[in-house]
Image (cartoon, rainbow, N blue to C red; front, top):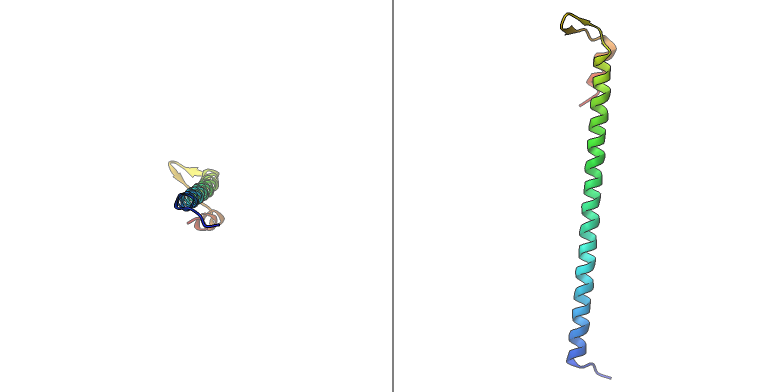
Amino acid sequence: MAKSSLEKALEKHQKEIERQFKKKIYAEKKLANKQRQDSERQAKINARRERASSIVGGQPTVGDIRILGASCEISIADFP
């Protein structure tokens, strides 16, 4: 049996709503992934900063000057 124009319009409207819903879910997933990646990147940066700080902080000082050993300089050079 042939569909009336009202039924066709209703189906078209339902498909459009589904498409918009899927588009919104995709955008939310993409945003969540970006936020997760940013937080992971920031956590790595903070961990690298803490390691470098602990390496430098453990070195002896003479007056106000911190004396870095050769192994310390190599370790710090690994941090971009």
